Image (cartoon, rainbow, N blue to C red; front, side):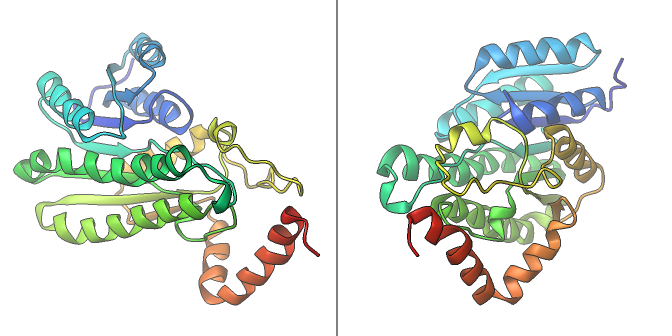
Length: 269
């Protein structure tokens, strides 16, 4: 049975992948977990699993692409539990296509709405409560794509760079109220993410198995960040080298990307 610590965490995108794994980990650690996503049937099953292990959970059907449902999510949480200690902005998806091939609505506008605007709106909804309590923690799931932008990830990278900038600015706004802001930057993770990208790779390039992470591993990193707040956590740690390389030698990243990916994928010599 999980030992209650009375803290409440709201997790968006909780119906699968990193969100689902993180919810289970926090439930086992004694947190009261609020599960938010569009697929209510999956949330209810996850709620039952968490409670079956002695945890406490609340399932709330939520569409993060609109501010109304996000405000309703916060209001429902406060009505049920009276507090929000942690908001884990985890919901997101990617479309990995050439920009000229992207659909203006489902590939471009939808990514921006879910990955960036949804994070901003969810945070805005919970901030008045955290400011009033002078306590809280915003944890934003970003991606290595928030540091290193690669071909076919134009819009995805734009949203992740945006969340990174949003998080840095927010930290400097709300720290005076003892509100923490943390960012998680994982590389490749074995989740449903790949099935939604609609990627068609001629080269077969993908994340090396040695660097591919599990949702549970990322979830444990989120729990560690909740217990010991950090500004940023890059996963796996070795990926820091790639981030530093891309920042120090952007011309080299351009050359490598063009010659090892863009040209062969576009069928150019």
